[in-house]
Image 1 (tube, rainbow, N blue to C red):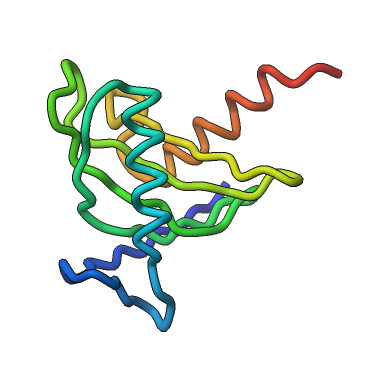
Image 2: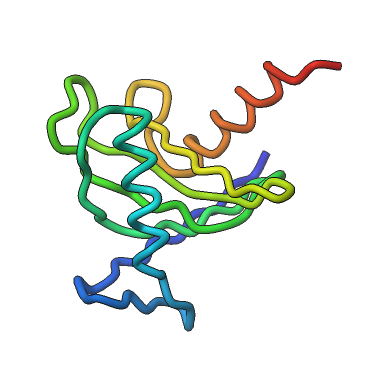
Length: 116
């Protein structure tokens, strides 16, 4: 399996522009809310990482966690799933050390829970 990741450091501005795309503040806020809901702590946006995996390609947002007991970073992204938008928030830790690993962990968890 071959993976690729490219890191973009974005300026702290109301509208974050990178690679000719605009990161909407509403998306960042939705991801921060997902982190609050799932992991019970606040977060601050750090950077955006472009990830290319066999089953998913897109940008993963990296957040610094504030007040979490065991982790200091979280990888978060959203994707369209039918008519709904799913938000994913994966903690940085022993088994997840970067954005690509966070995406792979989510894909593996989904495959394990799939009913055949």
